[in-house]
Length: 481
Image (tube, rainbow, N blue to C red; front, side, top):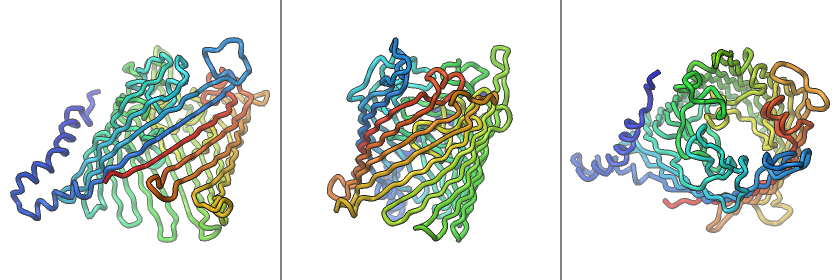
C-alpha cells in the first residue's frame, strides 16, 4: 500500500519553512510594529534547555552471558556499562499566536562497557545501531547523536486546540506512548489535542518510530526483529489512536481510548480514577488494557499473536502519612496465544513502537505473563527531619506474581509459576545553587524465579532468569534561556 502520510520531503520542507519564515517576516515587516511584535513571540517566548546525564549499571543474571561456557546455574554479568548523555532542546513561542517549532536532540557515549557482548549492545542508553531491525549484533554499542524532535506546532481557540506534526513524541492514554532512556522515543507523525473545560480529546497517527537507542526512524512490523520483520506480510503502514477523558469537579476522571495498527491489532483502554480527601490525598484507579490481533499467513502457516482478546487489569492506590508515601497496586493478565504475555503496544517487537501502560514497578519483570496475578507494595520516606537537610529520601518495595501459565494455557510446574522481587532506593535532589534540581539516585533490585534463562525465552517468553541489578543515575537539568 502506498503511504499517504508524512512523506520525508514534505516533512523536511515544512520544518525548514517554519525555521525561516519568522525571520523573513521580521525582515520585511510590511505590516508595521504590531505585526512584527506578534511574529517575534516565536523568539521571545522560546525556551532553550537541556540536561547532562550519567547512568552506571551492573546487572548479574543466572546464565546471563550468552558467550560464557561451563557456568550453568551461576550468576554472570549480563549488562555492565557506564554511559553519559547530553541533550539540548529549543521550544519556540507561537508566532502570531498560531505557529511554532520544537527542535531537539541528544548525544550518548559509553565511558565504560563490556564489548563483544550482545546484551550490552542494547543497553538502551547508548545506540544499538541506526534502525530497529537492522542493528545486526556485533556485540558493541555505539556513541553518536540523534535528532529527537523536529516538529511544527499550532494552536487555536486561545490554546484550547493544539496540534503538532513531524518528528515528535505522541501520547494517547493507554494505547500510544514512547520508550524512554533519559530521552524519549520519536514518531514520524502528528497529533491533535483539545481541552474544553473538563473534556480532553486527542487523535494521533504515525508511520515510523525510533526508540532512543536508535538514530533513525523505522517502519512498523507485525514481527519481532529477528523474524524477517520487513517482509511484505509483516509491514504495518501506520498506527493510530484516539482518546477522550472527562474530569469532574470532584476530581473523578474517566478515560476511554482506542488504538489500531493497520491490518494487525486493535487495542482498548479504560481508566476510572478518583482522589479522596483522606490520607494526604488518597489517589485510586481501575485500569483496563485490551488487545485483539488478526491472524495472518507467513510461509503457509497462521501467525496468531493472541487467541481472542488479551488484556491486563490493574487496581492502584497511593497515599501519604507525614514523611511517608505508600503505593499498593495489583495486576491480572490474560494473554493466550503465541505471545504468552500482554504487549503494551500496537506492534510486536520491542522498540518498534511503544504503548502507554501506566503500571511500572522498576522490579525487572513486566509481571504480564498469561494468567499471572501480581501485587506490588512500596514505601518511600523523606529524610529531611533525620539528616537536617532537605532533598534526601529512601524507598523499599516488593512485588510478587503467581499462577503463571504458558500461552497455550498449560500450567507452570516445579515452582515456575511464581516470581518475586525486592527493591531498595536512595535519592538526593540538590535544593539550591547552580546545581539545583540535580538528582542522584541509587536503585537495587533482587529478582527471583525458578525459570531457567532458556526457559524464559521459549516456554515463558518475556520472563527473565533470576537477577541482581544495580543502577546509579545522575540527572542534571539546565536552562540557557
